[in-house]
Image (cartoon, rainbow, N blue to C red; front, side, top):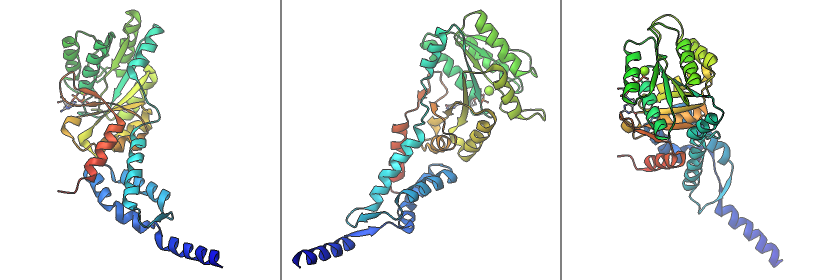
Length: 308
Ligand SMILES: Nc1nc2c(ncn2[C@@H]2O[C@H](COP(=O)(O)OP(=O)(O)O)[C@@H](O)[C@H]2O)c(=O)[nH]1
Ligand SMILES: [Mg+2]
């Protein structure tokens, strides 16, 4: 009798001390957070996806009333953000280049992205980093469309004392890239860096041209270069280039001018590809390794700050 009473009382107590997390709870509790992410330039579809995932995990769960559901959700959200930016395919590019070097063949990298995102500058910065690692380099002037593009790459090559292969404006960039690869093979150069156009003057489609370059050069690595300041545009460009070329990794430039970091999160979320580096300035040494965990933490901290 006494036992039964105790059991019944126990149920009553637990019913009073437990609550079920509803969809409305999640919506309400994550509202500030959603706004903060959107203010950090994280694309709407990404924010919706993250919140949807949290709902899927928590709605209907029973938790103790004394527990702050908001804290649980935020902790989990922080974990999810780390998962998103920490791509399953981590990539040590210098290691991969070293391995290819052992085979005696050049490591070929094609850089893609629309005009002005920083492809050419990033190639120069990357060449600088490669030289510091002791690798030899040839650059291919594959942007044969934009006026001045060939000279721009040539100037970087001269300043960095690396070989530069170019043809005339209007030349087929796939042919320029192939020349550079042949040069690298003949001279036992370690790395070929292929610059590309970001816009066509002709009616030819940019994506067709990029697909062709990738098919002809068979790169070891295809890198999408996105502008961190471009927000949602950077995300839709990343999608388009991913569909056309299934690039392997991304580099985000102009991170020095963007404290928010939303583009990095959104591009990782949408492409599921690793971010190799961040461009953090205009000098040759301003190419920083991307640290996904530190990045996710800082995004959470920024988003957790009360709105000013
Ligand atoms: N602040 C800043 N500017 C950059 C960065 N990367 C590129 N830029 C600038 O962006 C502009 C376009 O770069 P460019 O390499 O010509 O772009 P491309 O058209 O993609 O080849 C240039 O003025 C660069 O100096 C970066 O990481 N930070
Ligand atoms: Mg360029």
